[in-house]
Image: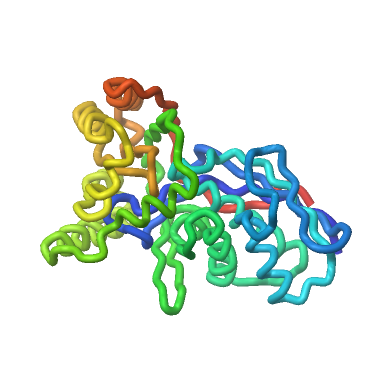
Length: 307
């Protein structure tokens, strides 16, 4: 049996507008890399990045603690984390580390877990950053592509995205608050108008059809959220300007990526991606905020790069 394994897991965008806590999409914008080695006693987190090294406060650590207990793993573990996904910017940073850890431990100890079990275990890591378990980002990072998360019981449906779907991700250079995901989740309304619920439900249903039909235009046109986005946009200076600019320059749909503050624009290969990107930069510049633009596409889930 091998003593070490390295797994890479992608960034992701969650919600995609109307699919709060249900939709996720794996993106090739960034990747986290986790190397797990059977070594010593207990669980040790090693990283040169600014992340918690305490296993109880680390997303990968929480997943490892659960899996060690659940599967009665006797070996000590050294978990080396190389962060590629920027933490706190709505791109599934905590999910990527958690996903990579679940996939790595599954392979290293030959647990032969099926996909729903892997997603459920990876979701435990979200407690460290979000304060609660949710599966949209981890499902995308584990499985890749577009995912729909059914709960009670957990059942993740994966659909391959259209080949021409392209996304422009604008990452503002803002100082994000500690426990940002927890803060942004607190802004989500607990009561909504039935008319708003119908609007979001109709767009979510149309988006699923778009993915099934490989219709990027239908997907982009369905990125409309009248419940969560209005509540969260206050956390993102210049959001409305960035959105307006991107739509004016050809983006099919624009929304907050996950809990933000990154903003994601949906487009196709035929779109003028440079023009859309520049307009998003100018939107943030209107409130004296710089941003990084990543043009990315959907990708596969966590994968082994070295054993």
